[in-house]
Image (cartoon, rainbow, N blue to C red; front, side, top):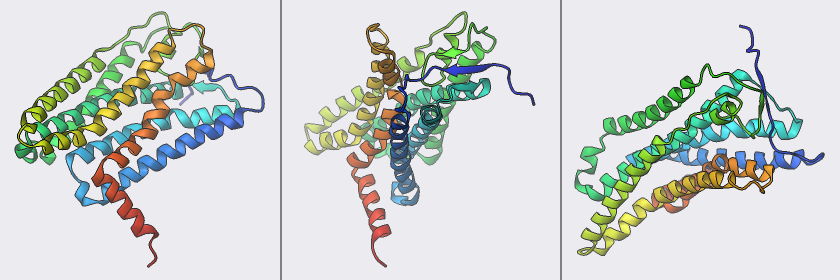
Length: 301
């Protein structure tokens, strides 16, 4: 099979001579943190049967999503900073763009599924196990990934034959938008983010109502609701803040290109590194399981 004739050139960061190795080690450190933190969380959830519950299964899906986003961008960023290679083949560019968009879409759909799970756990505690059966949990996970993939497939299919007006991508990584900025037309979609926001907002309004109503009789209900939902809410807000920084930074023309490009990859480098730490520190069960397995590994026989 002959290679595709189109070869893009990623503009990337402006790196002064001799400073490429510094950027390489920063990207490498971030990638190592992502791999280690997410790897530990996933392994502990898989090994510990006490964590084979809906919330932690959804956390595993979030881990896979984080690894997808980081792996799509950071290895190529390291190669660019170390070797200065900016060229990227057409199929490699499309694959990276598809992975990055799938990461962004799946992150939101999985967080939406997690909000539904928390809503059932707080508002219907007696029926929780009857509602969130293994079959329904699997259906939730499949639905979350299917919606994300379908949205991205449709997004790319709509622009499959769009003519390009150049081959220089003025970004650090390839995305549908940066490729289409070379094209003679661009359509923007926002319904996925809005839909997920509505689902999460509805879930938390019902959770707030239930915790206030039930908390009048038992104050422990509010404390349990906060502990149950705090990690999910922090992860969702972290993702939205990173996305907001990207949008706001593009509005300021006085900001240097390197700063704008750095802000643009915050969505890739920040949530995947911080999410597993948030769940590992805040979730008592997950934290206890991590410490237990680490103690077993390091203790002398």
